[in-house]
Amino acid sequence: MADNVIDLRSDTVTRPTAGMREAMATAEVGDDVYGEDPTVAALEAEVAALFGHEAALFAPSGSMANQIALQLVVPPGDELLCDADAHVVTYEIGAAAAYGGISSRTWPAVGAEIDPEVVAGMVRPDGYFAVPTRAIAVEQTHNRRGGGVIPLATLRELRRVADDNGLALHCDGARIWHAHVADGVPLAEYGALFDTLSVCLSKGLGAPVGSLVVGSAEKIARARFVRKRMGGGMRQVGVLAAAGRYALAHHVDRLAEDHAKAARLAEAVAPFGVLATAVRTNIVPLDLTKHPLDAKALAAAARAEGVLISVLGPRTARLVTHLDVDDAAVDRAATVLTRVLRG
Image (cartoon, rainbow, N blue to C red; front, side):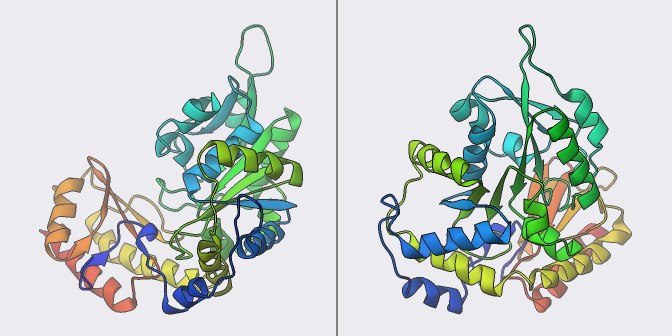
């Protein structure tokens, strides 16, 4: 990507910093399939401790981490409940069904604005030829709904619903670091509410690769088996785990900077009536339903001036701030988007 291009498509496009590259180059490594990579082991122990769980498992992608976790809590043929726009059923190309034999049912897409009583009303118990519900999954923060943060009180109510019905509660925590910074909720407090979590290092934290499954020691022992079955057994992967450890040490608190930059972009586009929702974290959702431009036209016009944005639907686009977008880039992107939207 040319250095003069401002890439707001996703926070997955970040490149390792100089310090992160140094950590990767000097990482101590071993064969992780044999459980002999010390850097991986250190990362797994660190992340498990952050969320107050017994164990964690390093995986090459967030999708794999999610799908491993779902197989830990939903037997084949049984049911998962989640949001209709959830990543686990929208962007993981049917993996829950293809790999885990999991049936899924969704509540209407509401992002972070979940009504626990609606979820409770969807639960199907064991019964005559019914597909029993086994788990609930939530996404913190919510990608397609503008980086929305599910309130702690809502998560506690969902935990109550899960407990009342003998269900597991999973968190797709790809961007849970953003929720932690935005609301000040300790990671361990989030962790205490979930049976399993997946947490990503390669989005806002800026590592090149990697997510982790977090849970009990028993669950993570089984997760290691499921990871191998899915092709996720890796060898001298400490070079990647070192990037994750560096990210945890240096890139969590700075997420507040990305939130501030997203707020500036939101302020720039707000006069044109395209801001889909209040911006809480690093994602700015654009609703072009009432604008003359559709999403593809907006993206093409912005690209022509060196600004890349995501097209999520015919009239839906998205801007995402991240480690590689500095203040000058935000100012330039705001100028370009304002000019294009003004027409």
